[in-house]
Amino acid sequence: MIIKILGSGCPNCLRLEENTRTALKNLGIEAEIIKVKDYNEISQYGIMRTPGVVIDEKVVSYGKVLNVQEVMALLNKPGHIRL
Image (cartoon, rainbow, N blue to C red; front, side, top):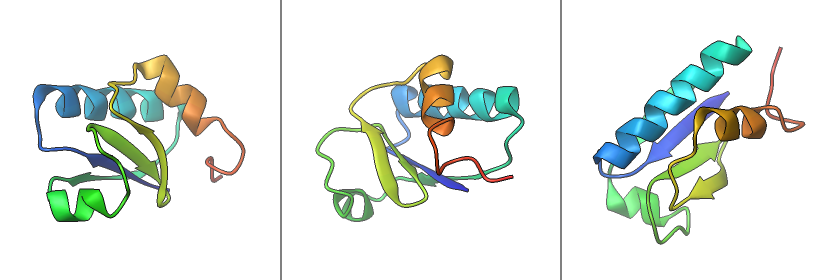
């Protein structure tokens, strides 16, 4: 699983990354986290507000700092967890 955090590296982006790492740890899932700071690359995902979350090249959230429980819910959706 590859998770991308889209944003400039602002405090909200950092908090979202931390929440994502915590959710992965809580669920016992290993994933690669990539920070995407380049606005040209971010714009290719069609989002207008950061921070954003992309799981396996699918935008699952943007414009909001998800808490740990919200990230865990996204990761628990069918098709996201790989054993």
